[in-house]
Image 1 (cartoon, rainbow, N blue to C red):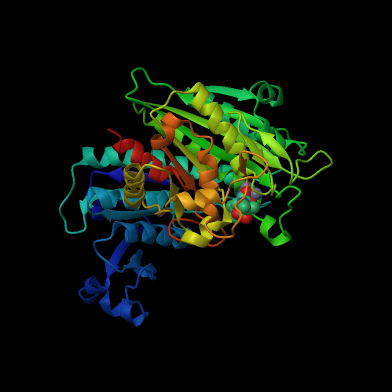
Image 2 (image 1 turned 90 degrees about the vertical axis):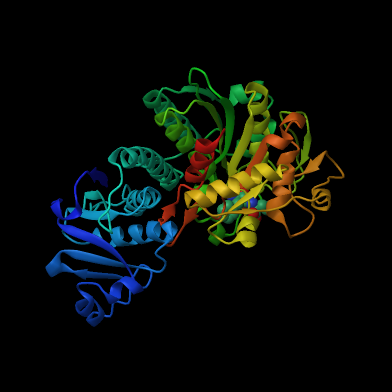
Length: 477
Ligand code: BES
Ligand code: ZN
Ligand code: ZN
């Protein structure tokens, strides 16, 4: 979808359709009040009514003050407008913050993924035009709005880039496929890119990651992308779980839970999207994206429950469930990241546990770490960005649940509750002492993928992690 901003009053802009947001209160005095109420329109949130004879699409809004509701309503209105034969739509904007929400709603809400359809049906609607005139006739400075538009488009398009990657099938997006994708991103965005193959991983003693990938015919890759501006204010490391498929391994998933496990690479895709947006916005922050790209499969040489693995940092891990593989991959990638990049912060993104969804529901990212103030910064940034995040607190008793009688630590908890937190406490074993307070773990198991539309998301990858991370990075002092 092309999103444009015109320095003109709304009525002077030529477009096939006008989109108007209306609250129940505004409906009372609406020029088409009779027509709209006749059609059963009550201005409920996301209720739509098209008055084609007036080339007008009206969308209900519950709360005049909520940018979040406008973002979602814009997405909903566009999904509907894309079914008509109109090619352009125009819309007023309200305040700079709301303008941002509307642009996000437009770009994220109009996203479609039709690569696997034999006959893709492209939308006729190709253009959304905003006027700099507010709905009350006042207007905002065009320069301010242009800057917002530019920044919002970069971030929203990076989110759609992530969605495209997540939606690829495991056949198309193997660990090597992910390395090729990273390499082409590096070329187009002027990033450094280093790839380690199996030999490279062996040389780095990344035995936990190697064990997870061993039974697959698609061998693992470690991917390191780096964005290095001239005089960076800070250095940030992002680590992503890139399970291009998670069958569960020998602790095989049940048939129904295996479906959608192509999305187990969403953390890796998110860190690629973030570094893409950071480089396009030319932020003066050095960003490293490290990805463990692995396929968790079964086979005669598969790693097993009962195996003991020695991770890169020397710690030994008792494997009791091969489906808790993400933490094994992250153990080694976190080790590698801390050895090769001296960063101010380290953040990891992973579709790590079903338990995170049990704890927070299917829309919310779990936020874990030792530094309460840092976690709070992230909760604030997420809220501001339109993503849902929830704090999942550590405690010393939970830590005991991953003790092993045989090795240094066990890859699963001895109790069935608190699985998202015990997974994070497992990762904590692979965070160096000096990084403890500078680390945050994001469990995006619920938020990264959806099988039914909600908010600005349609079926498939959501791009979770990109918008909140850009918000945090843009606020970084
Ligand atoms: N990739 C899954 C977690 C997951 C589940 C993500 C559902 C998205 C949706 C992860 O590797 C996994 O299988 N975790 C296990 C851990 C358990 C064996 C301790 C889980 O959550 O059941
Ligand atoms: Zn698993
Ligand atoms: Zn997994």
